[in-house]
Image (cartoon, rainbow, N blue to C red; front, side, top):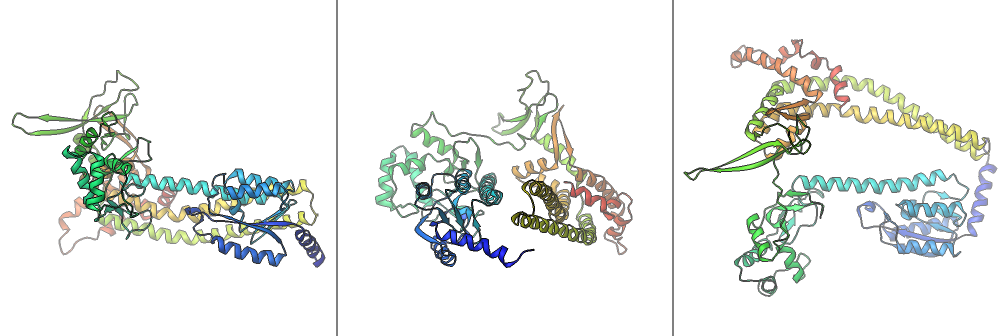
Length: 557
C-alpha cells in the first residue's frame, strides 16, 4: 500500500538533490511552421522561471535562440552541451523536450548525457527526467518530436507537389505577380500585380526590339519608370537577367528546381512561348533552351498490351493545298522493351471514343443517384448504432489496458516486481494496447468514411462521361486514371480493369437504363410512375437497397 512516507521521502530526497544542481534555462522557438503554436521565447522564460522558483532550482544562465531543431547545428544548443560537459551546470530547464531536439543526433546526445549522469536532471514545465528513470519515456517523447518534423516535411512536400500539379507555382510569386490575399494559406492563387505586371511586359518588349541590352533596360526601369521590387528596393543587374530567363513569365515553371518536372501554370502569362524563346536567343542562351515538354492527355498511364512498354504520343500537322491546317495526335508503343513490337498507332479521337463507350456503361441518371445515396445513408444510420456499441466496448478495453500499464509501472517503482517480470508483462500489455488502438482507429475512422467514398464513386458514375466529353485535358486524364487500373492498348483497342465498386454500378446502370427505356413514354404523363419505387422492387438493384454487402465493399476500398 502507498502511504505518505513512500511518496514524500523520494520527493524530498530528489528536491534536496536538485538544490545542489546548477541549471541552464534553455528556450527556443523557430519561425518555421513546426513551432507556430509554441509560446514565444519571452513567455517560455517567464514560465520556466516560475517553475524554477517553485522547485527551488538554481539557474546559472539563461540561453535562448530562434532556430529550427530539425537538424543538428544550433550554435547556442551546442555551446550549452559543451558547457555542461565542462561542468558549468548539471541540469536543464526547458518548456518541453522538443525544445531541446527534433532530430535524433541532438536527442541522442541529451539522452546519453542523462543516462551517464553528466546531466542529472531535465525539468520541463510538466515533468522531470532523471538518470534513474526508464529511458523509454524520454526516447518516446524525443522520437515523437523527430517523427513530427519528418511527417511535417513529407506533408509539406506532398502539398507543394499537389499545388504544382494543379498549375499553381508553390513558391513566392516573381515580380509582376502577387498572391491572392483573399484565399487561405496554401490555396492562394497567383494573380497579376497591377502596379508591376505591365512594366515587366515593357521589359520584354524592349529586349524583343533588339535595340536594348539588359543593362540599358535596367537603367530605364529604375530611373524612368520607377519600378521597384516587392520589398521596395530597386532592381539589380542580376534581377533583370532573372526576369528575362524565367519561363514562369510565358506560363510554365519547373518544380522542384533542377528536377526536370515542368508544369503548365494557371497564372496569366506576360509573354508567349515563342517570344520567350526569341529572348533567349537574344541573350545568347541558345545552348540552354527551356525544356518543351508537350503534355499529352493520356501518356504515362497506358501500357502496350503486347510488349508492356509505355504508350507515348506525337503530334502531326497536315497542310492542305487550299491552306487548311489539320492537327492530329497519335498514340503508339514506345517499343523500348521490344523494338519489333507489332502494334500500330491510334488517333486520339478514336481512343477517346472508346473511353466514352466504357463510361456509358457505368453512367447513371440523377434520379438513380439520389435514390442510391438515400439507401446508403439509411443503411449507415442503422449500422452506426451497432458500431457505437462495439466502439464503447473497445474503448473500455483500451482504458482497462492503460490502467494495467499504469499499475505495472507503480509496482515496479515500489519494488514489488523484478525487472524481468516487469519487462515481460509490459511487452504483453503494450502489444495489447497497440492492438486495441488499431481496432479503435479502424472502427472509428475508416468505417465512418465509407459513405463518403461511396458517394464519390456514385458521383463519378453520374458525371464522368459528361466531364470527359466537355472537360479539360486534365479532367480527361483524371477520369481515365480513376476509372480503373491495368490500362492496356492492343490492336487499337483500349482495355481497363474497372475498379470493383464501378463493376457493381456497371450492372446496376444496365438495369436502370432498361427501366428508363420502358418508362420514358410515361415520363411526362399524369400517371408518371415513381422511379424510386421501381428501383426498390428490382432484384438486380437489391444489393443497393439492402446495402450491407455494399457497405463492406466500400469499407475495403
